[in-house]
Length: 275
View (cartoon, one colour):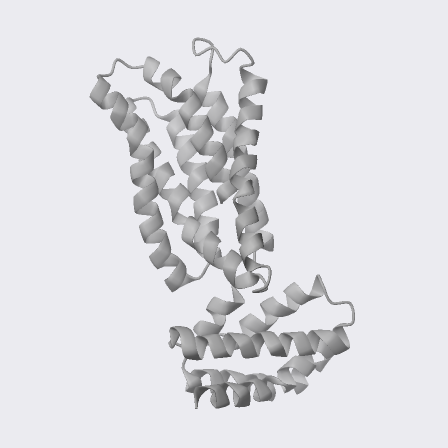
């Protein structure tokens, strides 16, 4: 998200003069053209925070990439300044919509010991996005001449980045296990943790189970003493369902079966934490 935001903010500031040169505008209208993007950014961030709590972290991020791509193409094709303004506001909305979800999923998916460092490193993506936009400008207009600048072509070039990120996020971005646990979706949280562990743990039959169990215990405790919106009865029913289906899924992998058998231990620990 920060990668896309950095690239678009730089590109839009570069092409602003070329956009205005196509229409005769007053100073007030020129200021409106510059500020409408940031107005959309503020509104999008407010609604994005509500959306990421209600619908999860993954969906707002995917919506952000999709919206950026769609509204950039609309801005390129719009024949009048008014329609460009509308598309630019919607573009700003989408740029801000995914920021709360991106911040949350980074914080919730990182080990506490490295969380601050990893979160700070995500800010580097903003600079990398600006570097990408600068590369597009250098390739299409090395002289930086506003007279010969094709702002529609430059916006199309920078829109390739969120389109690529949309593809990658749709197939590879996982939901936050913390958010899943807060909403009682224990099995989905377990599956996400198993995928995450598969990139790090080599001995799945021994280490993955222990690490998954510890992670689920931590998430249960956080849900109980932090947000307080995870129903104990809901969690208990989910864990019972996992235990009942354990025998049916033994053929899908020893590690998964071991984790499901241990989910009752997670529930016992969760109940002890609530006392």
